[in-house]
Amino acid sequence: MSKSPQVVYQRLNRLIWLNRLPKAKIMLVENSYLPTCLGVTLPCGDGSAPFARPIIILNAGRFWEKTLLHEMLHIAEPSLLDGRMFDALVERYWNQFKRLTKEPREVPGRMPEPIA
Image (cartoon, rainbow, N blue to C red; front, side, top):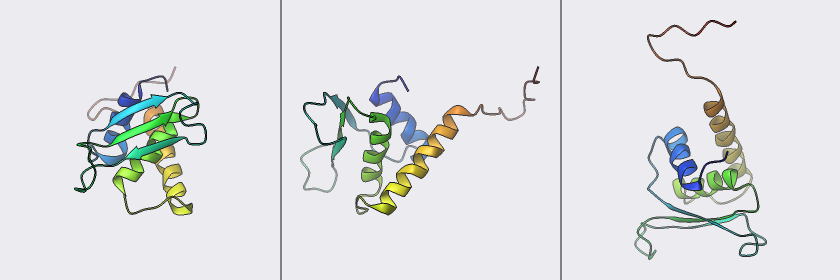
């Protein structure tokens, strides 16, 4: 993917969560700021957080697209902690996202294009 993190967030939100996640601020930072971390999410909305919307900070030197999905899952399921089940969900959603963005979609009421 060559789109901005904000665009990828919106697309993931639409395709995976049907736009149920709140708007978030996404920031890419250099590897030197997060040398041992792929990403972090600063939550909002529970009354104790000082932020009006979630803030996701991603390490730009690594695979930020999949990490973004990981951080979005933290927003969608705040009680689900990192671990085997969490990683399995990330993989499932990532594969679903890749499939949805690669396959051509049929338009209802329109015949598919013939294969030459």
